[in-house]
Image (cartoon, rainbow, N blue to C red):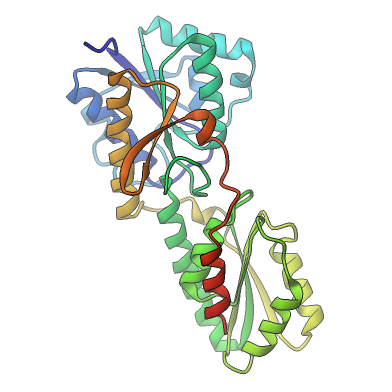
Length: 324
């Protein structure tokens, strides 16, 4: 018989489309299993301040299609202190909460790992980040929506680029990971994709831009924000080499975080939300639940929080082949 009778759920770090679908799955799975469920408002800050409210099936009605997170999210500085974590533990103890589900990324799981060990407290994590940069899962909640948002935006940019024979440098999110730039770059037919994991070969890029001018009336360069130069610098280098090119920069920014989650993200969030609750009931703790090879899989926080630092070279090869 499980000892889990009351659980809480929170979202932390950057918001990602599909977080609401995950919250919905957690709440309704808890209720299905006769477990009381609470929502923590504004991430770990809510644990510290005691902003914790009981939730029911109606609390999560009509949210599966909404972007963002109804529980709100902030990056908590107080939770990083021992004193803050003690307050957080005291608050959940007052309510009799005996399990926690956190939805977020690297920083979220780092905090969960520390908190779980300090107080011997059961915590399961769901990977909610548009960067798709966590080990232990093939895809994170929000990634599919983000790359589709980028694809849609750049398709529109290309219309203008074609009309004016322009070179567009498009900067996308990815401070530590170039996966958004790489996959969306392939999907829109980019001439080059610059990511932080790979040293930029500007000679090769300039040669490609010179060659493709004969075949294309527009050219798109995708740049991850984590690339050491960034979109504006890349554009200046292109202008310096080809002063006769009409070069423009478009920084997509936070548009990539918002919007309705895709079907894939809604299904992924639902699967992982159900599995997170079931994992707690089964006695799991200190783990992230993800999907590997199509199957639900659990991995320790210590392994999950390590960023993926190896890029699939087959994807970069595809960019080179198809950019001719």
